Length: 177
Image (cartoon, rainbow, N blue to C red; front, top):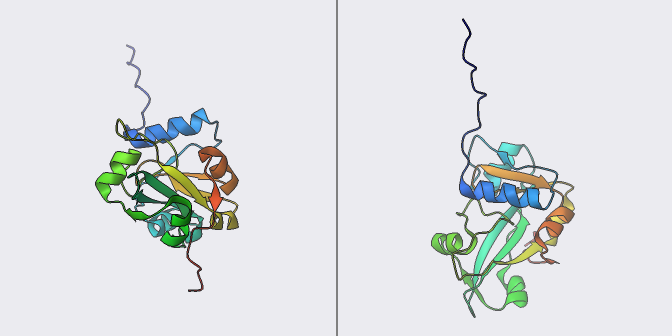
């Protein structure tokens, strides 16, 4: 008597945002696939603790609403720094706050999982304007959200710049203040 073959275990289905980021990384031949964390990492602190890295190595995504045209402005900044809206506004014009619905409609991601790539804005909306803060270049390896609060992926700051095509600027508050 022969036994039927047991199918190989499959990974659980991942959310759409995570899969978009995974596909975007593959399309750009990024050498590291996104990781799925067992615990959610909605904040930079949670991500740093889950990964065992310093808070500054978390490449957090902060979304603003440009007042002149309602465009989304996304800053990828070091997790241990606060974005200085006045410095950013010098590059974008006046900014306002972005609520959860705005972030989701403009990026395709929920707050806590906004990735620097793999966007899926709602129809008729353009992809966010991107900026990378230069403070990330203090580290050899940084970690960004991969489209879901459980997803992250590693890269160097130079790889982040190449993956996004975003300009590197100084947009965080002076840490001594």
